[in-house]
Amino acid sequence: MEIRDIETNRFYLRKTLREDSIDIFKLLSDQEIIKTLNMPIHKSIEDTNRLLEEYLEGIEKGIKYPYTIIDKNTGTFIGIFLIKLDLYNEDAYECTVYLAKEFWGKKVYTEILPYMIKVVFEGIKTKNFRGYVMEKNIASRKGLEKLGFTLEKIFNVPGIEDKIYSFLMTDKMYKEII
Image (cartoon, rainbow, N blue to C red; front, side, top):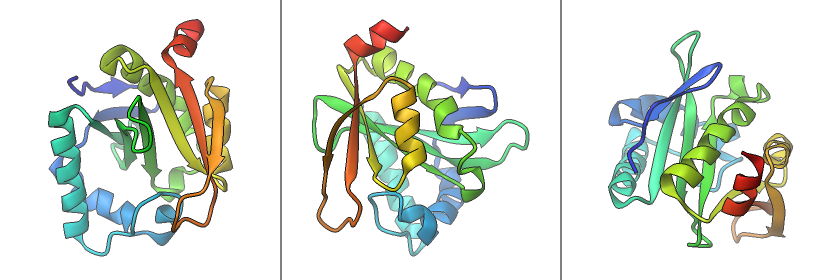
């Protein structure tokens, strides 16, 4: 599937590029942002460049679809919305979102997620779409529930203090809400 530009009320989403590396590094080298993600902190731009190479290879293989999120009013990079083959269940794709802290609590996720759901079920054509959220990330959990995802399970991952909440939307559920 080709990554196509998407426009929401407040944001542009486009394919993530190597040129985004400095902006991504600023986010992923921030301890507050990293503690909400299941990934190590980026200590150098090389860490970010390796991640970007993984993204670009993933696009070619059809297993990763990274979207850069741009604020329409300012043209500012605010984060990444990544759709990727589910690490735990290869019957699905999952999403990961990382945002600049000044956009936390501004309903970015809630605005973008309906577009990404459409990409997953109409573009990628998977049967299942999952969102994995740390227990402390209450806003993201509520956003997934509001958009029709159901809580599938709660589990622990070695090395992560928080419980992980797995939310699921099936293609059947998607067809019922469109």
